[in-house]
Amino acid sequence: MFMNGKRQLIATLAMSASVMFTGGAMAQDDKGLISIIVNDTSNPYWFTEGEIAKETAEELGYEANVSAHKGATHTESNQIDTAITNDAKAIILDPANADGSIGAVRKAVEAGIPVFTVNAEINQQGLAKAQLVSNNAQGAALGAQQWVQNVGDSARYVELEGAPSDNNAATRSNGYETVLSQYPGLERVASEVANWDRTQGYNKMQSMLQANPDIEAVISGNDEMALGAIAALKEAGKLDEVVVGGFDGSPDAVDAVKAGEMDYTVLQPVAVFSKAAVEQADRFIRTGETGVDSEKQLFDCVLITSENVDQYTDPFVLEQ
Image 1 (tube, rainbow, N blue to C red):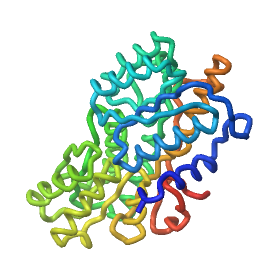
Image 2 (cartoon, rainbow, N blue to C red; image 1 turned 120 degrees about the vertical axis):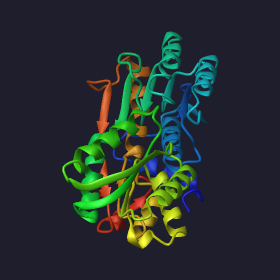
Image 3 (cartoon, one colour; image 1 turned 90 degrees about the horizontal axis):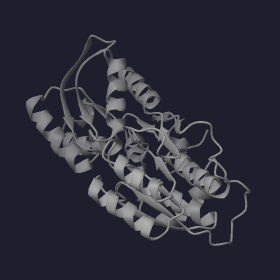
Image 4 (spheres, rainbow, N blue to C red; image 1 turned 180 degrees about the vertical axis):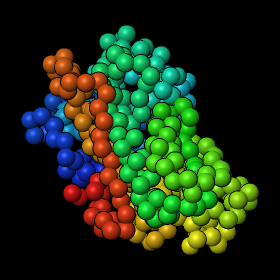
């Protein structure tokens, strides 16, 4: 199980991620606090995001803490206030809301604390020093192409969508549509928002199955929703008849691919960009520069199928 022995596993990942920090050796001096704010640490994707950032910060000589806003902008704002009170040297933030988080980021910046966003972005340029995100359009196209390969060019299907407050949800859904609309025989008979959550994915899948018992495929904005759909399909005795695709590359999703229950997942390189965000924060603290040319930085996703799933050995890392 992913959560067992998690700190040892995450420490190993942080040391072996492909983006190496400047200087190579572990720093020994206490350089102050880096505050890390993620969405929900009960989700393995966001847990990894926070722990990789924390381990990297500690390796570079900082104190680091991780907190979670669970999508609530008021909680996020309070966490920013705490970081300001604690005189954080930098904030690594997975924003709660593309628009609603702008004020919290501005508050930190006005207090002299640089903010580096990861995984999700805010809808304003020039506030955060860097915004590091998966290339969601590229990943969605990868997933949709694999989905069509498995489903065929004619099927009735449903879609599970992520939280509307997160730009990633729309980017992935639009990416799916761009590919799937090329096949007139593919009919989307239902679409539900399940907010990146496994339980909601299960409940929404149950409802869609009741209304559309003859569906042949499910395409999902993330793995947790897809895993919820798989549970509902299993319960209904229909999983063998339905193709399910996910997005994240989470350990549970990879296990489902290995078991033949999920047809593929699209791995987001969260271990890479979380580490890179802290490295850029460290460089900015030391030099006043991030060392990169642009604020927004895209990291390409990787497709995981039954053909390459054995190359996956650590959370959110596929050996190349």
